[in-house]
Length: 558
Image (cartoon, rainbow, N blue to C red; front, side, top):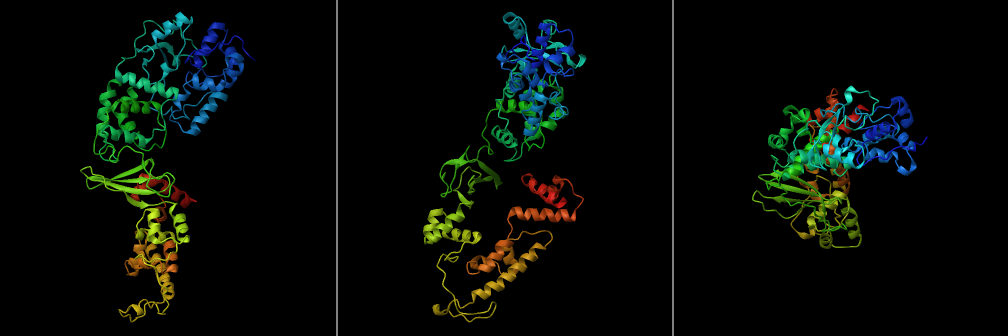
């Protein structure tokens, strides 16, 4: 059923206000009949922020108004604001509930458990009411005025006022229009119009309009805190200084937001915004933090961009973006008064640079290459290129090339010294005494096949011994060499010991594999552990590797 006399919504008008104006203009005899006509249901709740049955309302509006349910949801409710920090799943569920159901659940969005109280007295701007009455003959409830952190009208720059409409004392199904009885001329102003109040209102309205980058995570917050001089170290926030400076800026708003800006409340939510979020916080908290950070001046400290502002150049000569500023992942650690920056490119190439306490930045130092190195080395070797030409092609020194070839299991014709290997043929047993003179003609009379077979068995036994050590020890090539009592022996001879090299490559653990094995070992000996953070604390694992703990615990439970 289409209602030809249905009204067109005004700019920034709430659906709550639109329905109330329609009811007032058409003089419906009862609420039940009105709701049945507009929404097809008698028990719809008159929610000003997240109403329901918007699809039914759009179907009953005249086609010339083009009121589809999506337009009503995004332009005439508080949906964009209240779901700004929600997960995609929560946002989709809330949108579906508003369009097809009886309205989004504040419990599902985590709003019911928040310290931020829901507005129960609708707000209005006296200047807006006067203009509306003069130009349109009636006023309406605006979305921007009902935000929990908006206490001023950004259009006229005056303080908002609380109306006489108290939703707690009304029926849950009543829609009340903005008019002289609701928006009284003698209503008191809510607060002042100082810089802090204006800044907070601007961020709140930007959030409602969807122009705030809510990809802002803990990393971005810490980066901004670092820029304004609120860090104790490269990674640690100076919480006391942050709290004192925040209180100096917004503390006078405590009467307007008592549940949010009390000393106890700030001690809880203010540090959480600089940490990885495990649950969504109310958008007002993010608005307060953003308004605070936008108003702070950038200062230069020893923690402020020690290697520039980035992005930084990629130094991978095998990548198509070589020399271009595409590196955005910079990880900085302290180092004897200075810092070491680890630059990680999306192509997998990693290099490091040091910065001294005096501010001098060192040359780039190669760390790891990524997936492009293996195919390139195999192709160059197949073409018959020399070791030095290969080194120049991949921008590594010859010994590093040989080391990378050994790590990747690539066969070459060069020993660790860079010289070509000779075809050793004289037989000898592993461990047997061989008389070797200084004569060049009698060098290398060893049976490398026999040595390889024997050394492979010894390396496998050594790796098994290391795996059985308690506390856990990582299986590495140096650790295997130490267990064999021959430090540095295998590293120099792996090109002559292919079977041993295969055993070593299978046995050696990377950092992730070692952490996973260590976690599993701990869980096996502590079956009562059920909380990942307790396991991480017991093992000294940082937050970045908490996902490994969860994965290991899931496999352990299964």
